[in-house]
Length: 340
Ligand code: BTN
Image (tube, rainbow, N blue to C red; front, top):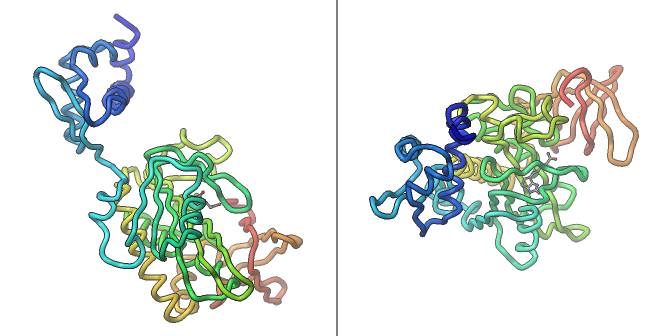
């Protein structure tokens, strides 16, 4: 018995993954013979056939011809323009979708396109990021093919000081899309979306502006959809989650992406029409911090402690300590005795 055969008995999943890799590597135009696959995987041709049948049952389009073998036509969870558009209604966000296999950061791609004049509503989506960025100079784990990494170009007529509100708007949209998957989502100010107390989604909003006018805003949203703990570095195991980990069900990425964009569109329109005040109540209803003891580490100031009482109509976090109320405009929040 070869090592591969033993591995197959122990882990049919690993063999399946290898089989998919073999087909994917050959490309959409090439066939791989059943005999070659059996040899490479160390299993019988009949076992190859069984794996292919089970993949087909899950939506993989694998073509077979008796003489040439197998060819992979489509994956079940493609994240290309056609797949996302199939779930997306008309609207300004997503009117143009740019789907790429890999990039450094979709925020960088989107900003570059915005500088080149790309209109509002253009969305850049990547299967993988090689230098995904988080807030405050952190990085964002961006494994290929499992999650969602997208950036939206917006050109709102607002003053630069109001731009952080767009992060809050995007947080609401992400929470809404996650709830549509049947999971409860809470928002940790300013824009982490938590599921089961752990972070499933992060938002990085960047802008290019003159002193009194926003040129464009890039709202970057990363949602951990199907990653497992093994995809996160160990220091994140207690803090991070994915929708799959929280709900036990794989999420169809294209459908989720379209829902997220539709949710963003709806909130963004309300924001443009009536300002963040129109969304503050909905935001407060989803706040993970209200009533909790928190510590805010300011970007350029000392830490502030207090009990969170919600957010103001302009998006500022409200803290109360010894009967004195304080407004925080920016900073990093730690829940005292809880999720960091
Ligand atoms: C954070 O929580 O610190 C923000 C994370 C933002 C990650 C997303 S993934 C898509 C977009 N591209 C990036 O490089 N970052 C954002």
